[in-house]
Image (cartoon, rainbow over all chains, first blue to last red; front, side):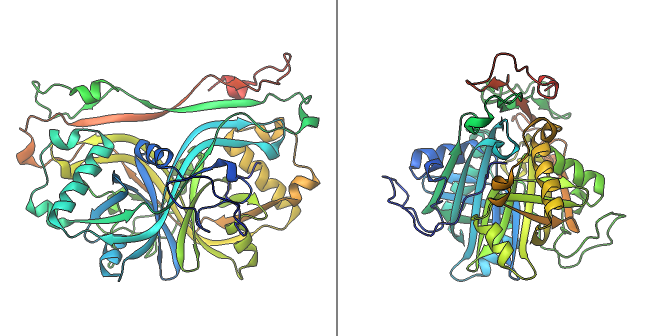
Length: 233
Length: 233
Protein backbone atom coordinates (compact mmCIF):
# COMPACT_ATOMS: atom_id res chain seq x y z
CA UNK A 1 0.00 0.00 0.00
CA UNK A 2 1.08 3.51 -0.62
CA UNK A 3 2.79 4.94 2.37
CA UNK A 4 0.48 7.25 4.21
CA UNK A 5 3.05 8.20 6.77
CA UNK A 6 5.39 11.19 6.62
CA UNK A 7 9.00 10.33 6.10
CA UNK A 8 12.14 11.25 7.90
CA UNK A 9 13.30 14.74 7.16
CA UNK A 10 17.05 14.89 7.09
CA UNK A 11 17.58 17.47 4.39
CA UNK A 12 14.56 19.71 4.07
CA UNK A 13 14.55 21.50 0.74
CA UNK A 14 13.80 25.14 0.33
CA UNK A 15 10.46 25.79 1.98
CA UNK A 16 7.88 27.43 -0.21
CA UNK A 17 6.36 30.73 0.90
CA UNK A 18 4.42 29.93 4.04
CA UNK A 19 2.78 31.46 7.04
CA UNK A 20 4.09 28.86 9.48
CA UNK A 21 7.84 28.39 9.30
CA UNK A 22 8.64 24.76 8.51
CA UNK A 23 10.83 22.95 11.02
CA UNK A 24 12.54 19.59 11.19
CA UNK A 25 9.35 18.23 12.72
CA UNK A 26 6.96 19.60 10.12
CA UNK A 27 8.78 19.02 6.81
CA UNK A 28 8.32 15.61 5.22
CA UNK A 29 10.98 14.52 2.76
CA UNK A 30 9.37 12.45 0.04
CA UNK A 31 5.79 13.68 -0.01
CA UNK A 32 6.71 17.33 0.46
CA UNK A 33 4.31 18.27 -2.30
CA UNK A 34 1.48 17.25 0.03
CA UNK A 35 2.58 19.58 2.82
CA UNK A 36 1.15 23.07 3.27
CA UNK A 37 2.03 25.76 5.76
CA UNK A 38 -0.34 28.60 4.92
CA UNK A 39 -2.80 29.76 7.52
CA UNK A 40 -5.81 29.26 5.28
CA UNK A 41 -5.16 25.58 4.65
CA UNK A 42 -4.39 24.90 8.29
CA UNK A 43 -7.34 26.85 9.66
CA UNK A 44 -9.86 25.31 7.29
CA UNK A 45 -8.81 21.78 8.20
CA UNK A 46 -8.88 22.58 11.90
CA UNK A 47 -12.22 24.33 11.73
CA UNK A 48 -13.91 21.45 9.96
CA UNK A 49 -12.97 18.86 12.56
CA UNK A 50 -14.92 17.89 15.64
CA UNK A 51 -12.30 15.89 17.49
CA UNK A 52 -8.56 16.24 17.68
CA UNK A 53 -6.12 13.61 18.90
CA UNK A 54 -3.98 15.04 21.66
CA UNK A 55 -0.67 13.35 22.35
CA UNK A 56 1.45 13.78 25.43
CA UNK A 57 4.09 11.81 27.30
CA UNK A 58 3.39 10.14 30.61
CA UNK A 59 6.09 8.15 32.39
CA UNK A 60 8.08 8.12 29.17
CA UNK A 61 5.28 6.57 27.11
CA UNK A 62 3.01 8.27 24.60
CA UNK A 63 -0.69 8.77 25.27
CA UNK A 64 -3.13 9.77 22.51
CA UNK A 65 -6.64 10.84 23.52
CA UNK A 66 -9.51 12.13 21.41
CA UNK A 67 -10.93 15.37 22.68
CA UNK A 68 -12.87 18.44 21.59
CA UNK A 69 -11.05 21.63 20.73
CA UNK A 70 -11.67 25.19 19.67
CA UNK A 71 -9.68 27.81 17.80
CA UNK A 72 -9.39 31.55 18.38
CA UNK A 73 -7.05 33.07 15.83
CA UNK A 74 -3.67 31.42 16.19
CA UNK A 75 -4.48 29.65 19.43
CA UNK A 76 -6.16 26.31 20.08
CA UNK A 77 -7.98 25.42 23.26
CA UNK A 78 -8.72 22.06 24.85
CA UNK A 79 -10.72 21.64 28.01
CA UNK A 80 -11.65 18.94 30.46
CA UNK A 81 -12.21 18.11 34.07
CA UNK A 82 -9.69 19.57 36.47
CA UNK A 83 -8.92 15.94 37.30
CA UNK A 84 -8.17 14.99 33.72
CA UNK A 85 -4.64 13.71 33.37
CA UNK A 86 -3.23 15.87 30.56
CA UNK A 87 -4.94 18.96 31.94
CA UNK A 88 -3.61 18.35 35.42
CA UNK A 89 -0.16 17.56 34.03
CA UNK A 90 -0.22 20.82 32.08
CA UNK A 91 -1.06 22.81 35.18
CA UNK A 92 1.79 21.18 37.07
CA UNK A 93 4.39 21.40 34.32
CA UNK A 94 6.76 24.31 34.06
CA UNK A 95 6.76 25.90 31.52
CA UNK A 96 3.97 23.68 30.22
CA UNK A 97 3.34 20.26 28.73
CA UNK A 98 4.85 19.21 25.38
CA UNK A 99 1.97 18.02 23.22
CA UNK A 100 1.17 17.11 19.65
CA UNK A 101 -2.35 17.84 18.46
CA UNK A 102 -3.55 16.25 15.23
CA UNK A 103 -6.77 16.61 13.25
CA UNK A 104 -7.53 14.37 10.27
CA UNK A 105 -10.31 14.15 7.69
CA UNK A 106 -10.67 11.09 5.49
CA UNK A 107 -12.04 12.19 2.12
CA UNK A 108 -11.83 9.07 0.02
CA UNK A 109 -10.56 5.54 -0.42
CA UNK A 110 -8.02 5.28 -3.22
CA UNK A 111 -8.05 1.93 -5.01
CA UNK A 112 -5.10 1.23 -7.29
CA UNK A 113 -4.51 -1.78 -9.54
CA UNK A 114 -1.62 -2.68 -7.26
CA UNK A 115 -2.01 -3.34 -3.56
CA UNK A 116 1.06 -1.17 -2.97
CA UNK A 117 -0.52 1.99 -4.36
CA UNK A 118 -3.73 1.79 -2.38
CA UNK A 119 -4.14 4.88 -0.25
CA UNK A 120 -6.63 7.32 1.13
CA UNK A 121 -7.37 10.90 0.30
CA UNK A 122 -7.08 12.91 3.46
CA UNK A 123 -6.45 16.30 4.99
CA UNK A 124 -4.57 16.52 8.25
CA UNK A 125 -3.00 19.13 10.48
CA UNK A 126 -0.28 18.36 13.01
CA UNK A 127 0.54 20.93 15.69
CA UNK A 128 3.62 20.60 17.87
CA UNK A 129 4.08 22.77 20.90
CA UNK A 130 3.81 23.42 24.59
CA UNK A 131 0.37 23.44 26.18
CA UNK A 132 -0.23 25.99 28.92
CA UNK A 133 -2.99 26.15 31.48
CA UNK A 134 -5.31 29.09 30.92
CA UNK A 135 -6.00 30.86 34.19
CA UNK A 136 -7.18 34.31 33.11
CA UNK A 137 -10.98 34.37 33.65
CA UNK A 138 -11.70 36.31 30.47
CA UNK A 139 -9.58 34.03 28.32
CA UNK A 140 -11.19 30.99 29.93
CA UNK A 141 -14.64 32.33 28.98
CA UNK A 142 -13.45 33.04 25.45
CA UNK A 143 -11.99 29.55 25.19
CA UNK A 144 -15.12 27.81 26.46
CA UNK A 145 -17.28 29.78 24.02
CA UNK A 146 -14.91 28.78 21.23
CA UNK A 147 -15.19 25.13 22.22
CA UNK A 148 -18.98 25.25 22.07
CA UNK A 149 -19.01 27.26 18.86
CA UNK A 150 -16.55 24.89 17.28
CA UNK A 151 -19.14 22.11 17.55
CA UNK A 152 -22.05 24.31 16.45
CA UNK A 153 -21.21 27.86 15.33
CA UNK A 154 -23.27 30.40 17.24
CA UNK A 155 -24.35 27.96 19.92
CA UNK A 156 -22.49 29.67 22.78
CA UNK A 157 -24.94 32.58 22.45
CA UNK A 158 -27.91 30.23 22.45
CA UNK A 159 -27.30 28.25 25.63
CA UNK A 160 -26.78 28.92 29.32
CA UNK A 161 -23.18 30.03 30.01
CA UNK A 162 -21.14 28.11 32.55
CA UNK A 163 -21.78 29.08 36.15
CA UNK A 164 -19.15 29.45 38.87
CA UNK A 165 -19.37 25.82 39.93
CA UNK A 166 -19.02 24.57 36.38
CA UNK A 167 -16.12 26.93 35.71
CA UNK A 168 -14.36 25.71 38.84
CA UNK A 169 -14.64 22.12 37.65
CA UNK A 170 -13.23 22.85 34.22
CA UNK A 171 -9.60 23.20 33.23
CA UNK A 172 -8.60 24.85 29.96
CA UNK A 173 -5.28 24.59 28.19
CA UNK A 174 -3.98 26.52 25.19
CA UNK A 175 -1.67 25.61 22.35
CA UNK A 176 -0.36 28.26 19.98
CA UNK A 177 -0.21 27.62 16.26
CA UNK A 178 3.49 28.05 15.58
CA UNK A 179 5.01 24.73 14.60
CA UNK A 180 2.26 23.52 12.32
CA UNK A 181 1.85 21.71 9.04
CA UNK A 182 -1.05 20.55 6.95
CA UNK A 183 -0.85 17.54 4.70
CA UNK A 184 -3.32 16.84 1.93
CA UNK A 185 -3.72 13.99 -0.53
CA UNK A 186 -6.19 14.36 -3.37
CA UNK A 187 -6.82 12.69 -6.70
CA UNK A 188 -6.75 9.18 -8.03
CA UNK A 189 -4.37 6.29 -7.60
CA UNK A 190 -0.76 6.51 -8.80
CA UNK A 191 -0.58 3.21 -10.62
CA UNK A 192 2.61 2.04 -12.29
CA UNK A 193 2.48 2.36 -16.09
CA UNK A 194 2.90 -1.39 -16.52
CA UNK A 195 -0.14 -2.01 -14.29
CA UNK A 196 -2.61 0.06 -16.28
CA UNK A 197 -3.78 -2.88 -18.35
CA UNK A 198 -4.47 -5.10 -15.36
CA UNK A 199 -8.12 -6.12 -15.06
CA UNK A 200 -8.69 -4.46 -11.68
CA UNK A 201 -11.01 -1.51 -11.15
CA UNK A 202 -9.17 1.58 -9.99
CA UNK A 203 -10.37 4.91 -8.80
CA UNK A 204 -11.62 6.68 -5.72
CA UNK A 205 -14.54 5.97 -3.43
CA UNK A 206 -15.40 9.39 -1.95
CA UNK A 207 -16.28 9.68 1.72
CA UNK A 208 -18.31 12.50 3.15
CA UNK A 209 -19.64 13.50 6.51
CA UNK A 210 -23.41 13.40 6.64
CA UNK A 211 -25.87 14.78 9.16
CA UNK A 212 -28.99 12.92 10.21
CA UNK A 213 -32.21 14.54 11.29
CA UNK A 214 -31.84 16.30 14.67
CA UNK A 215 -33.17 14.22 17.59
CA UNK A 216 -34.80 16.45 20.22
CA UNK A 217 -34.36 15.57 23.88
CA UNK A 218 -37.31 13.59 25.17
CA UNK A 219 -37.92 16.26 27.80
CA UNK A 220 -37.81 19.16 25.33
CA UNK A 221 -40.76 21.51 25.69
CA UNK A 222 -43.10 21.46 22.69
CA UNK A 223 -42.74 25.18 22.06
CA UNK A 224 -38.94 25.12 21.64
CA UNK A 225 -38.24 25.19 17.95
CA UNK A 226 -35.27 23.82 16.09
CA UNK A 227 -32.80 26.70 15.66
CA UNK A 228 -31.85 27.81 12.17
CA UNK A 229 -28.20 26.87 12.69
CA UNK A 230 -29.28 23.23 13.00
CA UNK A 231 -32.07 23.22 10.45
CA UNK A 232 -29.61 24.41 7.81
CA UNK A 233 -27.38 21.34 8.08
CA UNK B 1 -18.81 21.81 28.05
CA UNK B 2 -19.02 18.29 29.22
CA UNK B 3 -15.60 16.83 29.67
CA UNK B 4 -14.79 14.55 26.82
CA UNK B 5 -11.46 13.61 28.25
CA UNK B 6 -10.78 10.61 30.50
CA UNK B 7 -9.91 11.50 34.03
CA UNK B 8 -7.09 10.55 36.29
CA UNK B 9 -7.36 7.07 37.64
CA UNK B 10 -5.94 6.90 41.10
CA UNK B 11 -8.29 4.35 42.61
CA UNK B 12 -9.79 2.22 39.90
CA UNK B 13 -12.95 0.53 41.07
CA UNK B 14 -13.70 -3.12 40.55
CA UNK B 15 -13.40 -3.75 36.83
CA UNK B 16 -16.36 -5.38 35.23
CA UNK B 17 -15.92 -8.72 33.47
CA UNK B 18 -13.73 -7.98 30.47
CA UNK B 19 -11.61 -9.59 27.84
CA UNK B 20 -8.79 -7.07 28.13
CA UNK B 21 -7.56 -6.62 31.67
CA UNK B 22 -7.96 -2.99 32.73
CA UNK B 23 -4.80 -1.24 33.87
CA UNK B 24 -3.99 2.11 35.38
CA UNK B 25 -3.72 3.49 31.87
CA UNK B 26 -7.04 2.15 30.63
CA UNK B 27 -9.42 2.75 33.54
CA UNK B 28 -11.03 6.19 33.70
CA UNK B 29 -12.33 7.29 37.09
CA UNK B 30 -15.43 9.36 36.60
CA UNK B 31 -16.80 8.16 33.28
CA UNK B 32 -16.04 4.51 33.97
CA UNK B 33 -19.52 3.60 32.77
CA UNK B 34 -18.42 4.61 29.28
CA UNK B 35 -15.43 2.26 29.24
CA UNK B 36 -15.58 -1.22 27.71
CA UNK B 37 -12.96 -3.93 27.59
CA UNK B 38 -14.65 -6.74 25.71
CA UNK B 39 -13.16 -7.92 22.46
CA UNK B 40 -16.34 -7.37 20.50
CA UNK B 41 -16.66 -3.69 21.35
CA UNK B 42 -12.99 -3.05 20.72
CA UNK B 43 -12.82 -5.00 17.47
CA UNK B 44 -15.95 -3.42 16.00
CA UNK B 45 -14.69 0.10 16.67
CA UNK B 46 -11.27 -0.72 15.23
CA UNK B 47 -12.70 -2.45 12.18
CA UNK B 48 -14.94 0.47 11.27
CA UNK B 49 -12.14 3.03 11.21
CA UNK B 50 -9.98 3.99 8.26
CA UNK B 51 -7.29 5.97 10.00
CA UNK B 52 -5.72 5.59 13.41
CA UNK B 53 -3.68 8.19 15.24
CA UNK B 54 -0.33 6.73 16.21
CA UNK B 55 1.55 8.37 19.02
CA UNK B 56 5.22 7.91 19.85
CA UNK B 57 7.93 9.85 21.61
CA UNK B 58 10.78 11.51 19.74
CA UNK B 59 13.44 13.48 21.61
CA UNK B 60 11.18 13.50 24.64
CA UNK B 61 8.24 15.09 22.82
CA UNK B 62 5.06 13.41 21.64
CA UNK B 63 4.29 12.94 17.96
CA UNK B 64 0.81 11.97 16.71
CA UNK B 65 0.44 10.94 13.07
CA UNK B 66 -2.59 9.69 11.17
CA UNK B 67 -1.97 6.43 9.37
CA UNK B 68 -3.72 3.40 7.95
CA UNK B 69 -3.87 0.20 9.94
CA UNK B 70 -5.11 -3.34 9.74
CA UNK B 71 -6.16 -5.98 12.27
CA UNK B 72 -5.52 -9.71 12.30
CA UNK B 73 -7.04 -11.23 15.39
CA UNK B 74 -5.43 -9.63 18.42
CA UNK B 75 -2.71 -7.86 16.48
CA UNK B 76 -2.71 -4.53 14.69
CA UNK B 77 -0.41 -3.63 11.83
CA UNK B 78 0.83 -0.28 10.58
CA UNK B 79 3.02 0.16 7.54
CA UNK B 80 4.96 2.85 5.80
CA UNK B 81 8.12 3.66 3.95
CA UNK B 82 11.27 2.17 5.37
CA UNK B 83 12.37 5.80 5.81
CA UNK B 84 9.31 6.74 7.85
CA UNK B 85 10.31 8.02 11.25
CA UNK B 86 8.22 5.84 13.60
CA UNK B 87 8.82 2.76 11.47
CA UNK B 88 12.56 3.34 11.41
CA UNK B 89 12.55 4.11 15.13
CA UNK B 90 10.69 0.87 15.78
CA UNK B 91 13.24 -1.13 13.83
CA UNK B 92 16.07 0.47 15.79
CA UNK B 93 14.47 0.25 19.22
CA UNK B 94 15.08 -2.70 21.51
CA UNK B 95 12.72 -4.28 22.44
CA UNK B 96 10.50 -2.02 20.35
CA UNK B 97 8.90 1.40 20.35
CA UNK B 98 6.36 2.46 23.00
CA UNK B 99 3.29 3.66 21.13
CA UNK B 100 -0.31 4.62 21.71
CA UNK B 101 -2.73 3.92 18.87
CA UNK B 102 -6.15 5.54 18.97
CA UNK B 103 -9.20 5.21 16.72
CA UNK B 104 -12.21 7.49 17.13
CA UNK B 105 -15.64 7.73 15.51
CA UNK B 106 -17.79 10.82 16.01
CA UNK B 107 -21.44 9.75 15.99
CA UNK B 108 -23.28 12.89 16.97
CA UNK B 109 -23.21 16.40 18.34
CA UNK B 110 -24.85 16.67 21.74
CA UNK B 111 -26.50 20.03 22.40
CA UNK B 112 -27.52 20.73 25.97
CA UNK B 113 -29.36 23.74 27.37
CA UNK B 114 -26.16 24.62 29.22
CA UNK B 115 -22.86 25.23 27.48
CA UNK B 116 -21.20 23.05 30.10
CA UNK B 117 -23.10 19.89 29.11
CA UNK B 118 -22.46 20.11 25.41
CA UNK B 119 -20.66 17.02 24.23
CA UNK B 120 -20.31 14.58 21.39
CA UNK B 121 -21.39 11.01 20.99
CA UNK B 122 -18.35 8.98 20.07
CA UNK B 123 -16.74 5.59 20.09
CA UNK B 124 -13.01 5.33 20.62
CA UNK B 125 -10.38 2.70 21.23
CA UNK B 126 -7.02 3.42 22.81
CA UNK B 127 -4.25 0.83 22.57
CA UNK B 128 -1.08 1.13 24.63
CA UNK B 129 1.89 -1.08 23.93
CA UNK B 130 5.22 -1.73 22.29
CA UNK B 131 5.40 -1.76 18.51
CA UNK B 132 7.70 -4.30 16.92
CA UNK B 133 9.06 -4.44 13.41
CA UNK B 134 7.65 -7.36 11.45
CA UNK B 135 10.42 -9.13 9.58
CA UNK B 136 8.95 -12.57 8.86
CA UNK B 137 8.05 -12.59 5.14
CA UNK B 138 4.82 -14.52 5.64
CA UNK B 139 3.62 -12.25 8.41
CA UNK B 140 4.54 -9.21 6.35
CA UNK B 141 2.38 -10.51 3.49
CA UNK B 142 -0.46 -11.21 5.90
CA UNK B 143 -0.14 -7.73 7.37
CA UNK B 144 -0.12 -5.97 4.00
CA UNK B 145 -3.19 -7.93 2.89
CA UNK B 146 -4.89 -6.93 6.13
CA UNK B 147 -4.05 -3.28 5.54
CA UNK B 148 -5.60 -3.36 2.06
CA UNK B 149 -8.61 -5.36 3.20
CA UNK B 150 -9.15 -2.98 6.10
CA UNK B 151 -9.83 -0.19 3.60
CA UNK B 152 -11.95 -2.36 1.30
CA UNK B 153 -12.70 -5.91 2.47
CA UNK B 154 -11.70 -8.44 -0.17
CA UNK B 155 -9.61 -5.99 -2.14
CA UNK B 156 -6.28 -7.74 -1.50
CA UNK B 157 -7.52 -10.63 -3.65
CA UNK B 158 -8.58 -8.26 -6.42
CA UNK B 159 -5.38 -6.28 -6.99
CA UNK B 160 -1.79 -7.01 -7.89
CA UNK B 161 0.18 -8.13 -4.82
CA UNK B 162 3.31 -6.26 -3.85
CA UNK B 163 6.42 -7.25 -5.79
CA UNK B 164 9.91 -7.65 -4.38
CA UNK B 165 10.86 -4.03 -4.94
CA UNK B 166 7.69 -2.74 -3.28
CA UNK B 167 8.12 -5.12 -0.36
CA UNK B 168 11.70 -3.94 0.12
CA UNK B 169 10.51 -0.33 0.32
CA UNK B 170 7.84 -1.07 2.92
CA UNK B 171 8.26 -1.44 6.65
CA UNK B 172 5.58 -3.10 8.77
CA UNK B 173 5.17 -2.84 12.51
CA UNK B 174 2.86 -4.77 14.82
CA UNK B 175 1.08 -3.87 18.03
CA UNK B 176 -0.66 -6.52 20.10
CA UNK B 177 -4.06 -5.85 21.63
CA UNK B 178 -3.32 -6.31 25.32
CA UNK B 179 -3.65 -2.99 27.11
CA UNK B 180 -6.77 -1.75 25.41
CA UNK B 181 -9.96 0.07 26.24
CA UNK B 182 -12.97 1.28 24.34
CA UNK B 183 -14.94 4.31 25.38
CA UNK B 184 -18.42 5.05 24.13
CA UNK B 185 -20.83 7.91 24.70
CA UNK B 186 -24.38 7.57 23.45
CA UNK B 187 -27.70 9.27 24.09
CA UNK B 188 -28.89 12.79 24.67
CA UNK B 189 -27.57 15.66 26.75
CA UNK B 190 -27.35 15.43 30.52
CA UNK B 191 -28.95 18.73 31.39
CA UNK B 192 -29.31 19.88 34.97
CA UNK B 193 -32.90 19.59 36.27
CA UNK B 194 -33.09 23.34 36.85
CA UNK B 195 -32.16 23.96 33.20
CA UNK B 196 -34.95 21.92 31.64
CA UNK B 197 -37.28 24.88 31.31
CA UNK B 198 -34.72 27.09 29.57
CA UNK B 199 -35.78 28.14 26.08
CA UNK B 200 -32.86 26.46 24.30
CA UNK B 201 -33.27 23.54 21.92
CA UNK B 202 -31.54 20.42 23.19
CA UNK B 203 -30.90 17.09 21.62
CA UNK B 204 -28.52 15.29 19.30
CA UNK B 205 -27.46 16.03 15.74
CA UNK B 206 -26.43 12.61 14.38
CA UNK B 207 -23.36 12.30 12.20
CA UNK B 208 -22.81 9.49 9.77
CA UNK B 209 -20.19 8.48 7.28
CA UNK B 210 -21.49 8.61 3.73
CA UNK B 211 -20.05 7.24 0.51
CA UNK B 212 -20.21 9.11 -2.76
CA UNK B 213 -20.43 7.51 -6.18
CA UNK B 214 -17.16 5.74 -7.10
CA UNK B 215 -14.93 7.82 -9.40
CA UNK B 216 -13.10 5.60 -11.91
CA UNK B 217 -9.53 6.44 -12.85
CA UNK B 218 -9.41 8.46 -16.06
CA UNK B 219 -7.23 5.76 -17.61
CA UNK B 220 -9.48 2.87 -16.60
CA UNK B 221 -10.27 0.55 -19.50
CA UNK B 222 -13.90 0.63 -20.55
CA UNK B 223 -14.41 -3.09 -20.01
CA UNK B 224 -13.39 -3.07 -16.33
CA UNK B 225 -16.57 -3.12 -14.30
CA UNK B 226 -17.17 -1.76 -10.85
CA UNK B 227 -16.68 -4.66 -8.42
CA UNK B 228 -19.58 -5.75 -6.23
CA UNK B 229 -17.74 -4.84 -3.05
CA UNK B 230 -17.84 -1.20 -4.15
CA UNK B 231 -21.25 -1.17 -5.81
CA UNK B 232 -22.78 -2.35 -2.53
CA UNK B 233 -21.65 0.72 -0.56
